[in-house]
Structures are given as structure tokens and as C-alpha cells.
Length: 437
Ligand SMILES: Nc1ncnc2c1ncn2[C@@H]1O[C@H](COP(=O)(O)OP(=O)(O)OP(=O)(O)O)[C@@H](O)[C@H]1O
Ligand SMILES: [Mg+2]
Image 1 (tube, rainbow, N blue to C red):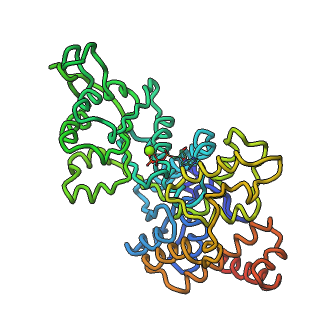
Image 2 (tube, helix red, strand yellow):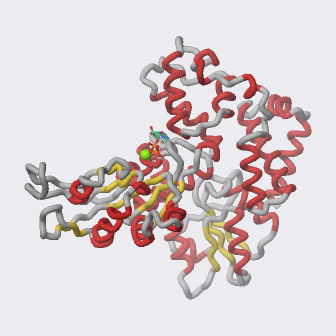
């Protein structure tokens, strides 16, 4: 403790509910209550916790993984003689700086979502953008926000003489003209080249080059891009002069590039150059918690919105239950159409849902647990989580949602959950007690 304070780490012992943001956990032995505490305090990995094993208690390798699985962001053994306090201070500084960026208007105001999976993807992008100049490969289904994240990387780029954000859609480059699109050309380099022209590599100098749909690049072109991506030097078509360019490379694709490599459609050497970091953007069905937040955000943005940003309960229920094969883009378009139909200052109602979007009779009768609930349980089983933990988590989530939905009114929450007020209070108290021990 003394060393940490001397190193400049501000310590505030836990007195009440945990404040949001990075935290330290100093422990001697790993126990079930300790892991439960990590699970709760990290909110499934959303809040970063640095777990430090006291020097007297040597840390087993398996314990490190157990702590990470429970939600700890990192685990350090305290080894005096290796300046552990400075290591802790630097780690916390970086995490605080990342949190500050995540709260900044250019991030929080534009990229909406509070689900752990989304926050993890966003945090990774923010860190890579702000603290490295490495290339990033963003993967994910159509409409999940890949381009939005690529643009964010450029916004957060800290270069003082920052250049432009240049987009090149690899699915649209024609084989004959592709060389010129990427490398530029000299006057007279080919028929029709009446003037010299800069290509994407020159235009993105000091900025960001975003190669969208990179999985669509033909193999011949993949080979041609290797050198410029590795060494940042290239020649215009029709020229023998090497030119320099300095861009950050961000690529996106909805293809599985590892499979494409295995099947010979994507070069491995190119893959490793474009994917110093990778970020998998989760589809909307894996972050159902974000649907209403996104809907409110799009409603506020809709040009026709007449001050109505509230949604009737039936509309909320409909939005959360329906599938979104087109992910966030599909939700955005749907909300814009609902806002366009809406009249008056009141909340959006079921009549605002376009006719062809209304749920069919079958959907009304669809079992509540079919869909995302099953997906979550399948994921839990895949991770080796047993029935006891699954049931406990389902119960906790139901209680949390009921309390949130009723604005913290425990009586109403209990009624919603079909239990007595006392039973709800006892469950909450038992849980708090378990966490405090
Ligand atoms: N988290 C988010 N917050 C706010 N808007 C979002 C978010 N994610 C996506 N959007 C919006 O959804 C739309 C689709 O996003 P984007 O174009 O980035 O997706 P994409 O993954 O590149 O899609 P595609 O694979 O089809 O090219 C855009 O209008 C974008 O602004
Ligand atoms: Mg895109």
C-alpha cells in the first residue's frame, strides 16, 4: 500500500457501492467469494479490475486464468524489487485515459451501446487508435458498425499533422483500373490517362486508408499490395520512381478471412500485415441490451422527430424481440420509418410500425425463450458453465431488469416478478451479504 501511494496511485478503500472505472483488488488467496466479487465488480468485464496477488501468496498459473474468466482485466504478482507499484500506476493511468476517451462526446455521443460485448469491441478500437499506429482488421456481419468504428479510429488518431480519411471499397474496384485506384498513374500511362492522378495510397498520406470489403480483393491485387503495406513505398502506374506514404491502415470485411486463407482465396502474408490487431464487432442479436438505446438514439436523429423520443411498452417489446439480419443499419432504417409515420408529441405507438414490418400472428405466439435467450445459454454451455450458475445468472438478470423497469420501485418489481416484496428483498439482501463476505 505504502509503495503504491508513494508511486502516486490514489487509493480509496471500498466503503459503499463501487464507483465506476478501473479498480485494484489486492488478495492473498483465491476463493469463491473473491471470484464472485470480481464478477460483480467488473460487471462481466466492463469495468477493468487489476488483481494483485500479495507477495506472500505465490500465484498459480491456473488462478490467473480463473481470475480473467471471472472478469479481471489483468493479474499481477506483487514482486518487490521489480518496481511493482510503478507497473500498477502505469497500467491504471492507461486504463483511466481509455475510460476518459470512451466518455468523450466524439465516442459516447456517436457510438451507442452499453452491452459488455460492444463495450469490449469499442474499447479495443479506442486503445489501438489512441496509443498505436498499427493496422486493424475489423470483422463483423453487415450493418454492425464496422465503418463507423474505422472512422472513429481516424478521429482519435493523435498525429498533429493528420491527413485525410480515405475510403476504398475493394468490392467496387475494376480489375483493369484497380492499379490506378490504389497507386495513381502518370499522364499517358495507359489509354485514357490524359492527366496524372493520385491513388488511394497518396491521398491517405499522414491519414487513414480504409480498405472496405477487403475480403473481395482479387488474388493478383493482393500480391501487388504487399510491398506498400509493408514498407509504405509504391510507384505510380507508368512511373519508375518510388514514393513514400505514411498512412494507418484499417480494413473491414464480413468474410471469415481465416477460412478464406485456408481455402486459398486470401494470402496469409497479406492477412498478417493488415491484421496487427483484429476487432470482431458483435451482431445485434448478441447485444439485445443495446437495441432500445440505439432506437432512442436514432429517434433523436430522425429529421422528422417532433420531440417524441419515448416508445410505448408494446413498441419496445416489439423492437427487442424482432430479428435484425441487417443489424444496426436495419434498426436505424426501421426507426426512421416509424419516426416518419409518427404524429404528435406523444410516444411512438404500435400504429407507427410500418405495415410490412408488423409481427405476424405466429410471432405473437412465439415462445419467449426462443432466440437470444437460447443463444446466451448455448454460449454459457460452450464455456463450461453449469446449470447452477446459469440459473443464478438468469435470476439476477430478471431481478435487475424488473427493478430497472419499475424505476427502483421494489413493490412493483416484485409484482412483475411474481414474488412477494419480502421474497425480493430477501434475495437482494442475501446477494449483497454474499458479496460482502
Ligand atoms: N453503435 C452504433 N451507434 C450508432 N450508430 C451505429 C452504431 N453501429 C452502427 N451504426 C449505424 O448503423 C449504420 C451501419 O453502420 P456501418 O455502415 O458502420 O456498418 P458496416 O458494418 O460497415 O456495414 P456493411 O458491412 O454493410 O458495410 C450506419 O448508419 C451507422 O452510423
Ligand atoms: Mg461498411
